[in-house]
Image 1 (tube, rainbow, N blue to C red):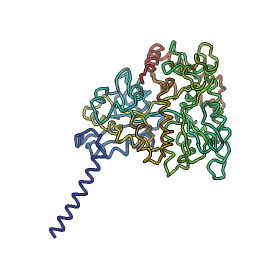
Image 2 (cartoon, rainbow, N blue to C red):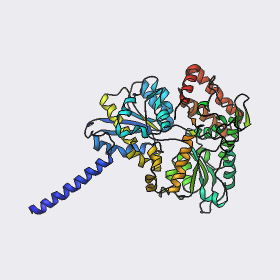
Image 3 (cartoon, rainbow, N blue to C red):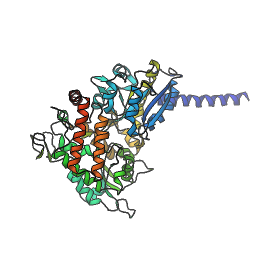
Image 4 (tube, helix red, strand yellow):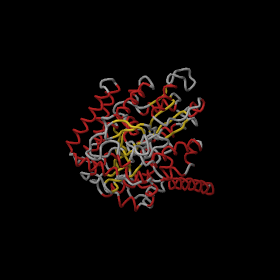
Length: 502
């Protein structure tokens, strides 16, 4: 009996030790030597209704709790409400949230009044975070405002084009280099059966629903016409007087392409969110798509994808004709007008959004801020993020050097080595481009893009506004908001945002 009990106890100890070992491995980067340090602390983290972005926070929370004692509550709100929800909570001193995972474009509205904790010292002292492994662009743009670090990047965002490699190879076609190429390819496959189910499919699938981030799709097209001289030139305003670049021949050409895209997709495309367009693409119903990095991992998700190893990815298409800002007209690319052109094509890869990032409420107690930082560090650290960026449902895309250099995690996710290289190569081409376009980061950028631009584009696609009326409405609303806030204030912020070292 005693011998049997001894064996039983031994087995229990082995199981317990194994469990502890697994937990220790899972939580290596959850702030070293902090087990139990945050017992009794609750961290309320707000982000948008997912599953993207919220999912990894929710999944990682129990492990972090077991390692540190801190309880993590993830609060979600619709993306269209997130900016204002956070701002109102700050401005009314309600302080419902200890940490926020949000669009780094909004830092100007949150940092200026003193709402966010300065994380500059924390990120450099936290060895588990491996701060220098985070890509320079994401450290400088997504994390930093006026020289100080206020957020921890959890995601890397670049828009790119995905294409059905099997279809294009079968038909002897090259991936689109220009937006005209994109339209030509989309037309060829619109209405054809692309997945063998006997039903007509679509040349292009893009999220175009109002209030669903669709304005970034238009900006990805417009960027190729509007910015030619490098990142510091900017694609939104003149750096001389902050006059919008939304009413000229380049913007008009982009609107024409955008309107054509709206007709080369599912019949209800104007009501499609990003989840809808991604679902269409990975189920084999689209020849092309314009999106962030999420589609790459989704193509190997066996629960929904029928296009594994049939997908390629390329840097955003460009244009052979670009805006001459002095005259407002389109001119041909040459060494002077397009110094960064590739084979006569001006590419302007767009860092739309900039990548979801986590910040801490400065007004919260010290132990809560410590716990919140430890949680964000844990989620971002290589051990966790290297897995999370390979899972399509997370919405996390690569942002660390290790995410690009180590293909093992991608191959374990189900990607072939070639598919991983294609996918990561398209993102790296964007990151390395001297003509990369930085997203707008000035005060109330949410109004400029998420309200004024979004509304005008929706009206344009619905036929309520002509092309000229659309450009005029965007320009007038942007100018009104700029004058309301202060033109010099906004100009200074805009110019500062373009001087990002990479």
